[in-house]
Length: 430
Image (cartoon, rainbow, N blue to C red):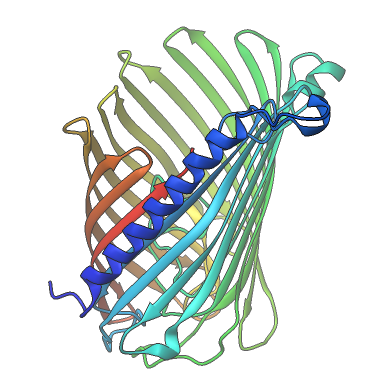
């Protein structure tokens, strides 16, 4: 890998800025714990709360990441355009624990600067809000719990793979559209009612949307484009714990999907009814397994029943997390074919702390999606990806990371791939 000129200087400069900020915050902590003499202590005393703490039961954690990457396909098209990209992400996480509600909010801005294609420079944003209302709801109805969440992301780079750091949504299915300014919003309401220590009734409602703001279509070698998509999902189910290590669950789900070409046109609606039975088992303290077969009936294909599946095997201990998962489900297709997609996805991930300061992680993904009842005709999207990262925690709250990714996509006779190599520095002030 050849880094752009001045990369070493950039990282040295950013390291100095982050270290200086950390020093200033440390001094602020010291001054904040001192009492100012003179006058009434109640009027002039400073807060003795630790750094980052807003008040009893709340905290604020600022963070900042600076990274440099080589990207072989910044437009995500078959006509590859390579560039060196500087990324700066800054934000904060706020947590609150009260007598009535527990919650958290994370918000940040992302800026990317391109060395060769400066017209691609952008500033994106993301925000996530979570609120757990169990304490207040439980006081009204014993055993009843509720939580709400909302995630908003604005970016020209749409995520194609699910990662541990990113919130899940129905649009992450291995599909990678070309670069386009997009807004994704996912709102969820979840509730549960404990009949007794072994039986639980649960229900949820979610509304997810994706909007695209650029109508120009790069040369892809295929017809079609992008579709503004709305997905509403209603789920209800029952869970029974058989013993301390085994539980079973039954669930019913209804999805309503709506697709509109981002260039304008009429909406195309699809409904899907799904049922699933799940079995979860704790094989050992570290090893758990999930198997959930089911079936789905799509309204645009009368009489055709699609089988579905969720399966996962996970190992988790103090140093290692490893998991293998498979899913077959009906998801929205928002690229080239606005329709429901039958998606098969396989994922494997491993994260291991090899030493007190070193962590290595790797992830492999494969996805194959086929359109169901599309107005644009049958369509298949196949992709796979690899990613490897090495993290080094060299100071409290400071992590350096070196990573490499490779992705390959095939759709409508078009093949596209993308490779990246990145070096980043992250600082958090706890």
